[in-house]
Image 1 (cartoon, rainbow, N blue to C red):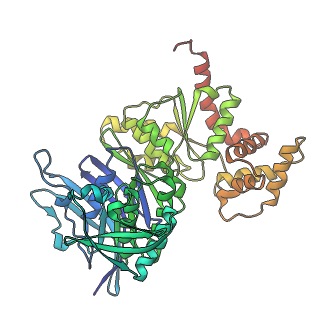
Image 2 (cartoon, rainbow, N blue to C red):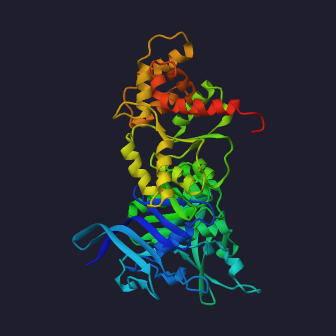
Image 3 (cartoon, rainbow, N blue to C red):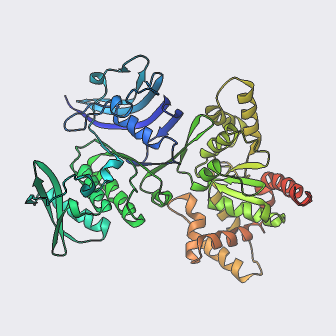
Length: 499
């Protein structure tokens, strides 16, 4: 019987190196990108994932000692992690199986032979070292050359041409002193990996791994952005995503390049950050919330919101209250991240006295739902944990919208309910809104309106919110948030200079 259709749904690292209680979900896209500041555990996650399986066919054979070698400072006792995964064994399908890994004595468990089966390929940053720098010969290098015309290799050439915007015409294999290395031809010039740029060499190495991997393999790439300019990195991600879909691969990579968020339609984006000994993960979040967790507060009043629409609303309220210069606004992405952000700040020792965490009001509507989510982030029975949970609940507020409708659709409904208005620009917005009867996704009601009017997104959101603020329902919609902001802004305005 053969093991097929393997997939890791999530990993929970209870304790490993500097990671504590970190859970990362890989569901969604077959490609997951892990972002995070230096030293917060991105590479550790990949190293752990590399050790979880034994090969099915030609996968690489990693054990925990490959990455977590016992040494004077670390014997790795107490390490504990688990995965939830699915697979097919012959005619039987196994869904959401939990497999635990730990080191409680001198050996890791389970024994390697008892681990799940899956082909794994790990591409570390050492693969970015140009071949010429690892070659210790100081004299002329003699090598023989064989042109490879295998169909798969020709496909790799086409993909490399697209990624690097450079037309490759041939792929060669060179042999020197028993070692083999690649070469290419481009624009009538033939050259080997000894003459390749580091980025070019890296692209070919990754493509060979990805295109030669067996179906259902797990491919791990550390620092996919290293040595690549932004355009090449994004095109590489496109190619990897397409191949992953075609061959049922699962690809997990790390990066420092926040521009990867632009490819959120192709990949899962997971931000990880360590705060006061706890490891936090954010799904599909924006970089400003993470920067806030790792940086300083720029203004005395800070408001955390889900997206650009909510950001435009908060800017409108700050302007109405005459306190724009006092308010900093951070986006955290999906609503679930709200609880992780406030948990991270509290665990970091911040009081959050002048911070507000705003959710859109379409999910986590009740205090019970909010409390349940907070309890998953801020665990523990000590008084400090109890106080943190109480503070977190008090700091989360929401816009007032009817049940079963999201903010974009609700605001669109307010616009089309408006009658005649003595303002040509506002009248045009209302007219265009009335032309939108259905969209592919309810979240696109406002986006489609802005596109129809050919406005820059930021400008368009501001104009739409200015119009919505004239509706009879505006006061109720923002009441809870505006009351908190009014109190904070008045306190800032009344504060003596220098305080």
